[in-house]
Image (cartoon, rainbow, N blue to C red; front, side, top):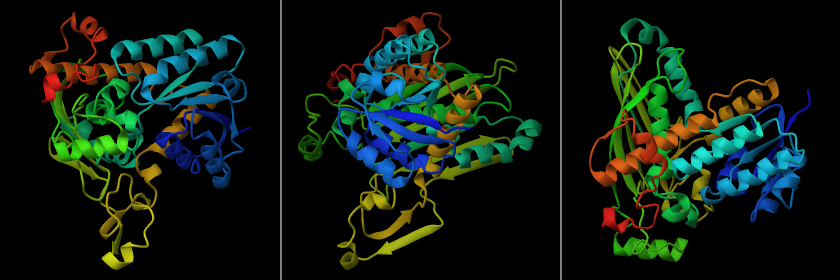
Length: 413
């Protein structure tokens, strides 16, 4: 069987990370890229890594005509526009076996719904990339505990967090382009993983019904004058004018429709975790058993003294979002695999080549967007939202958070 020829739309941080992950994936090659910037560098990375003779294309249409599947990895604020171009390319004759969209599916429920409508009208098999669902430590924990889940009862509490010192690029910090702050950027991960952990053995991703959500958002570090100035100088985003939250936490209550059992998923996210680097912390609690994941625990530790630290060129060679190049460093030898990027690519490639459903589709991505936007609404209103209210879906579809509108000062300051 021929390799699946994959094309990237976008060549930023996540595209480079996915290209690194592709080194571990059989049966596919990075055959092309379209991006306004960084395309040549990504193509060179692909060729050096031996993952394909990646060609740079001048349009989405040209890319779609010359690959088997595409991955939508461009910034959030251009997703709908780019998907419209993909849909037009398919109508013009491009034969795509599949399309991937990186999280979050949309900045608002309306955007996410528009993307689902476009992909389904075009008839393109689709996969939603939520890498943390694919993390081997999560998968192994759930498999290892399956006998206990079946005999003692399912997990009743999941606590999930993702924290680091802040995004790489300016648009991530701009709530009007990104769709919010840390809740939009990383809360979607934690909400999805919590929901997944709480899902009974053998049931689909959306089996557990969301009942209510409560949330709190705040601007803690990056609202201080000293750090606002740093952010403005480094990223060109002025949090004195258009602030976004750098901390978010909340709880979603889910109900088992077969038993009526209520369970809870907690999420916590921040852009001010100035330790070794990116930390994913998840645990699941059930009757008589539990599990815990902490990605800063590594079998490899490195110590670098002050004098020797001058030779370090890139702190992130140890860990994504690392902020230090000396002292005791937690080093992960294969972050792309640890965080689930390799497994999600393997799942998508298998789905597109074997014509089967992937773990997560764009419709699932829409549901995650709904939960994240409901969390924003709950934080704005300072109340617990009843997600069983029949009018809530309509309210969410027309909702854009004050933070995403650039009015974050009304709720954060």
